Image 1 (cartoon, one colour):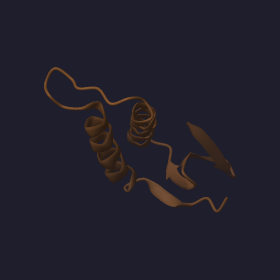
Image 2: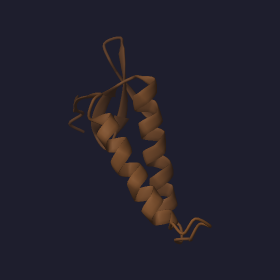
Image 3: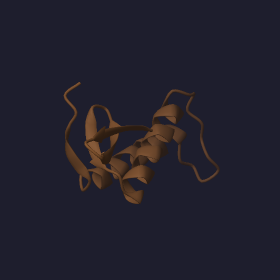
Image 4: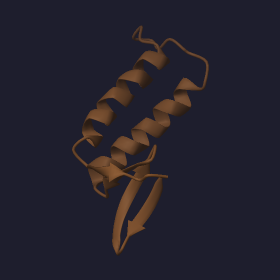
Length: 77
């Protein structure tokens, strides 16, 4: 997880976007990073019938929804 300081305020960075440093934003970014890693691996079927890529995509969607509440502005990198 990347961070950036503007003045003395710490922000979380994901894909060139800045987010307030909160527990919810940290968890959402961690979930996105995990899901992206999972999507780079072969798809597997779980015992409950769901596939790993389906679960990863659902996790990304939910995490992105959460992050919308904490986004400050784009980093302009």
